[in-house]
Length: 112
Image (tube, rainbow, N blue to C red; front, side, top):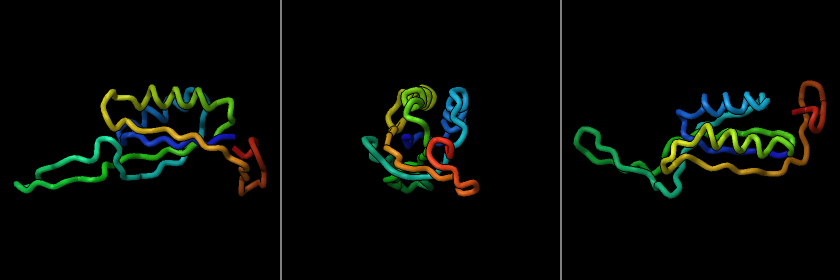
């Protein structure tokens, strides 16, 4: 089993969710996060004063899936989240040792 963490632009959430549903991934966890990479924030002008926005709003999607589905999930996320501009995001893949469904006690792939 693998955990996929994807950092994307907030307005791309529906596209990514739909793309993952098409390949059979049903569950995910979404978190509002802030950060920066190469884009290093930006400047905004509000009422004539310039402000530096160091951290850009992003969404973090977390998915746990069988190792067989990882490449398909990565491709679906990349295709759906891509705008071709800086700040489109990152995808991280991590190993998952165990999953337990709290309600039933199921373990491993059956608990996903």
